[in-house]
Image (cartoon, rainbow, N blue to C red; front, side, top):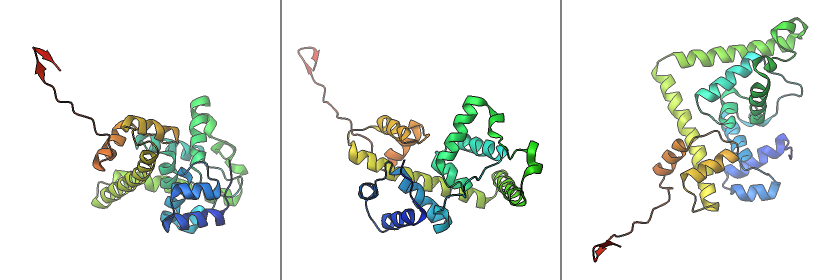
Amino acid sequence: MTKFNYETKLEIVKKYLAGTNVSDLQREYGIANHFSIFNWTDRYKKFGAEGLKVRRPGYEYDGNFKLAVLKWKKENQATYSQTALHFDISNPGTIANWKKILDKSGQSSLFGRHSLQNSQEKTIIDKLEQENQNLRIEIAYLKNLLPDVDNTNVYFAEKKQCDEQLLDIIKDIKKQYNSYGYRSVTKELQKRGYSINHKRVLRIMKENDLTCKTKKHDLTISGGLLQ
């Protein structure tokens, strides 16, 4: 897998926002999956240029944080990209790895060397980073508990943003495979790493008139036989 540095990702995002086609950018920079471009663009819009920088080598997340991230993803039927954006995780693949570890070895396997058992061995920087992550989890949790209008607006705004991102990708799929119905589009999205069900895809396609038109046949009766 090709690694792209900060400067290259920033250049790609700016070209995409300026109107360059995703397929053209893929060919120009040798990007295997155009989903990466959408992920970088979303991080740029939400966090600015800093959002395109990868975490420092050796950065580790607390086991409780990993479980909270996976739980939020499942409850919201979100993609790895959407989940990474929500929790400010630079690489969506990190979350996918956590899911594989969880499925294979259970929850305890998500607690690495920075778990509570050896917290005394952490450096001061590690402790501060951990406290920051815990605070972010608590804030996200409390926001979901508060039934105020602001939270409702935030929810629908994020939902709309996710739908718009999916719509761009669905349109791109339909350009390549015009005969694809919503089920085929769903399978293609899932192959590209999206955890999404066909009902949501069908809704988005219907709202944007992207569903396949079924041919209607006129039925006539001739000689007592249906033709």
